[in-house]
Structures are given as structure tokens and as C-alpha cells.
Length: 327
Image (cartoon, one colour):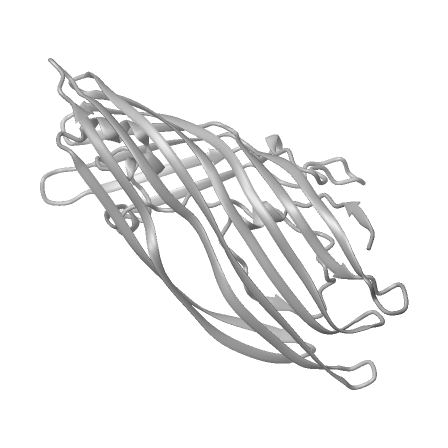
């Protein structure tokens, strides 16, 4: 067995919504892993129903994930939990043959405990939360016939993983109309995958496997302000997040007879860029309208892979703007 070092951006795939669909004869193991955009996931049932547009108006434990300034509005001890059910159909296209498999999972998405301290004026609230940021659980089978030699081929993928954010935060009311908050979080998690291929190079019925530990940390700070009655404003700054990926990848060595196992050691660090967002809400007593806009400068991305096109020297990943509207 030989041991070499492999740089990978797999972690960034783990921290984004997982792409299950596959097409054609992709190289395996992947040789050009694209970093997907990391969506700001909605937190809390109420704010999920608002499409995640809540920077200006969030006022419960979900503030830890949306805008920590909203913690300052909590006036009594609060425990908040959210259960999430996910279901999807996985479609694979392998040598022109389509297969479909249904996946479903139910788990506790978040839990936050908030404690307001008695103050002479204003407010002081501290909170802690556990947020299951990504749950990966699936088994996929792809079947087809290789047109080169008319050989039946089968591939199966068994994936499971969990990335959890552990957060602590606080907020204060600095005036009758304004709140300021801060939170810091750390990531922990693990990702495991086993792929079984019918053929790969000169090997038959071979396994590829990943076993990766995930860590990291980040922070955010926010404000909420009510300039006039019924109108609320919010702003959030999210600092760069440092992510670590440590583990092993094994594969058969198809370049030699007998296909012995090769081991790749992963020990990578990625820094996701800062982002900043603003929100506005109109909140009379009978309904709520909210609008959020978040800007992320992906030119600031740092990871063990190319960020510029080697020919044109232009950035591969452009800045993005996330727009959300809820009623």
C-alpha cells in the first residue's frame, strides 16, 4: 500500500445542498470538484415559511442562525426546537439507463435555549444552540450497459454524514429602537461514503471509500432598528469561516495487476468568504412583508484548488447576491 497526499474541496460539497443526480460516465474518483454556492439555510418553522426573509424581524431563538440582534427581543426564557423532514427522488443516468430511488429522513434540525437577564433598562439576552446544518443519508444504485464491448455495468453509492454547528451568542438593546447582537459557532461532523464499481480500469467489483472528519469555526454580528413605526431594518455581517477536512480516501490501483489498494491522506483547510446582508420588513398587526439581500464575495475564497482560470487569469467563482422575499 502506498500513501500520498490529496488536496480536495469535498468539504465544500458537504456544506452545501447535496447534488444527488448523476449523468453519464463521470471520472471516478472525481477529478474536478466544483464548489457549489453555500445557501443561507432557513431556520425555524415561521421563518422557513417566510422564505428565510427575516433579518429585520426575527425575534426568537432562530436569531442565532439569521441575525443575532433578534435575540435582544426575547423577554422570557425560551426553548425552541425544529424538526425537519426531507424527502427526494434520486435519478441516475448510467450508460443511457435511468434508475430512480426515493430517499426520506426526519431529524431534529435545531434547538436553541435563550435566557434574558434582568436589566434596569433595555435588555441583555444570552443563548446557545445546536444546528444540524447538513444531513447526508442515501443509497444510490446505477445500472447500465457499457457500449464499449456491450458489457453490463453496475455502480452503487452508500453515503452518510452529518455537519453540526454549535453556537453561543448574546444581544443587547442599545436604545428603544435598536438591538445589537453577536454569535460565534464551531463546526463538527463526519462524512463517510463507499462506492462499489463493477469495473474500473483493469479492476472488477472494486470499492472506493471516504472517511472524513470535519471541523471549523466562524462568527456573525447583526443589528436591528425600527426607524419609524411598522418599519423594521436589519443588517448582518458574517465573518470568513475556516473549515478543516481530515481523513482518508482509498481506491484500487487500476494501473497494476491485481489492483492493490491505494490510500490518500486528506489534511486540507478552506476559508469561505465573508458575506453581508440587509433586510427590511413592514409589520402591521395583521400581516408581515419582509425582504432580505445577502452579498458574498467569492473572490475571497481560499481552498486547495484553483480560484482563477489558468488561461484567462479571471476568477472562476464570481460574487453572488441572495435575494429572499416573504409574506
